[in-house]
Image 1 (cartoon, rainbow, N blue to C red):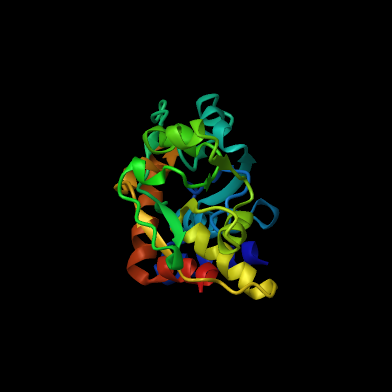
Image 2: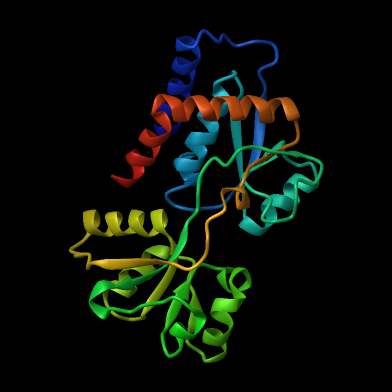
Length: 248
């Protein structure tokens, strides 16, 4: 249903802007990670990232065809020319393609219970604390997490809903998570169970660079069309509406 709604919205956007489908409109096969709620839900071809990218491409008549892979394979599928675009290069470089403007922003933070009054401003502040993070976080932030891992206090958990529930119950001290992902699962737990969310502090530990996470396209023209659609999505308020539909 979400996929159908997104397609209808994309078509309406083109009509409102006087942009009929043309011969240059293409299907764009794009590699996405297997499951990154609320950004990507493969079972329904929905999520914040899919809707933003799909509607941005639809602005010039293109149709998004998502393909799902383990996250580490996403840039490889692009490099091997199995897809026309990829949600991210994971630092591998454009590899013969063209970077688009950032479609979404990931803002990783340390999440702690407010009642604990923990302050984390340097790696040593994690000494003695049990930290849980998403898979691959240790490789991404070794300066923060190596000592915790060596002390046996570091764990990676693919199911990020369990991270939220575990922190709330005091099973560990710190969650390393994207702000929106943590908030999404907090909302889901509140809606679907007797879960009562405790107040949390979200502590920044690194500067967010939007260019760290950008889609990459094999076609320069489609990249340009995507950028134009993304700009329109933001100017119209639709971009924020997509975020709000999953997080409010």
